[in-house]
Structures are given as C-alpha cells and as structure tokens.
Length: 257
Image (cartoon, rainbow, N blue to C red; front, side, top):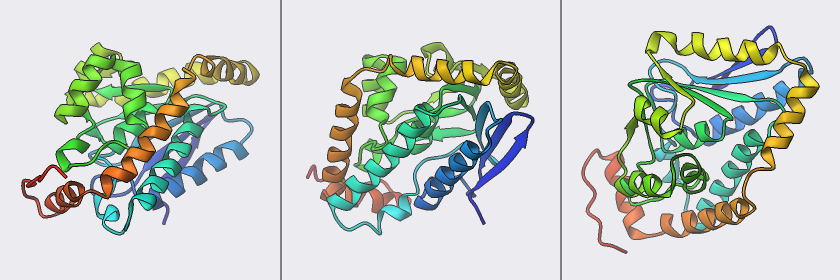
C-alpha cells in the first residue's frame, strides 16, 4: 500500500501523506512521493498540487527508527543528498505545490513543507526543526530554506533551541502564507488552488520557471555542505546517544563528541 494517497479534483492533484501514527518520513514515503510526482507529470491537464497529512499531523518528522539501520557517515550523507534532490524537484516543479499543514510539521516535515511553493497552516499547528535536541542536525535543506523565510536571526534561534513555533507565529514571520482555524484549512487551500487552476497552464508553467531564478546561487553550495555535515554529525557518539535516547523516551546524555 502506498504511503501517499493520490486524488484528482478537476485540475488539482491532492497528495496525502498516509504513514500513521505521525506520518513520519521514511525512505518508502519519499519513494512514494517521488512516484506521485511522476504521476502528476503524466497528467497533462493538472495545474496545481496540494500536499497534506492524514489524521492528526502533516508530518512529525523523519522516521528516526530508520536512522538506526544506517552504519556510517557516507550512508547518512547519501540519504540527505537523495532527499534534497527530491525537495529540489518539488521546488522546481512545473506547477505550484501547496502545503496544507495541520497538527505538526517538525524536522523533515517542515523541510518538506518549505520545499512547497505556498503554505497554509492551522493557527495551533507546531512547526520547527528540533534535530539538535537529538544531537543531530537538519539534513534536508532546512538550514538553507528556513533563513530565507524567517531571516537568519530567527533561524538561528529556532534551529539552535530546537523549539517549535505556532502556526500563528509562522504566519507573522512569513514562513507560511496564512494561518487559519483548523476547520478552514482545506477550504482555504482549495480556494486558492481553484483560483490558480482557472489560469492558463502555459502561463502558470512560465511563472514557475521565472520565479525559480530568484533563488541565490549559493543555495546549491549550502545544501551540499549541509549534506556533508549531516553525514559527519550522524557518525558521532552524541548522535548515536541522541537517537537512542529518543527511541527509549529519555533525556540524552551528551558527551560533546
């Protein structure tokens, strides 16, 4: 069974993350998401993609249990690079991708949302990059995309503290387009998707191409450096302790090495 639901309403594709209980992002989820994007590309009439989470969360983050199966820094770096390529594909997609965020978008979940072009969120949702609380770092371009949306000072605060912000604060910072009550999330998202879908497809595609030129040339260098650091950090003793502590639901005992 696919962990990404696929539904089409008129000219709008709705992709739903279906990986209970918290929609954790595993290799299977990423593979299924890539396959869903392939499917979108095969539908020549589609004009908008919506990504949402099933049940209580958008996505509470990467599947930490999967990390324990990786043995060395090269494997972690390879994972980061592969996921970064998927998220870059999303950011450079030929039609707009809208994230509808509820419950939580943490770690990889927020990195996924930031790779979308437009983001709507519920007012009480939690958004953040808590990796440092596990002795690890973001690896899916979070260190590069977050400062672009909230500014470097707030990005330092959020990543170094590991603390999350609410949907309301995310809206005030410019991380998301709008924060709405829970009951209005999909209605608001669909309303904008329908406005976009009423436009000419060639015009939509050209705008997607043109706006992408605004991305800084240093972005590619930044995400490569992040992938390198992701591999190095994950091979450290503190990372192993942090991940094990998370799985055992206890506070980590970091030795700073």
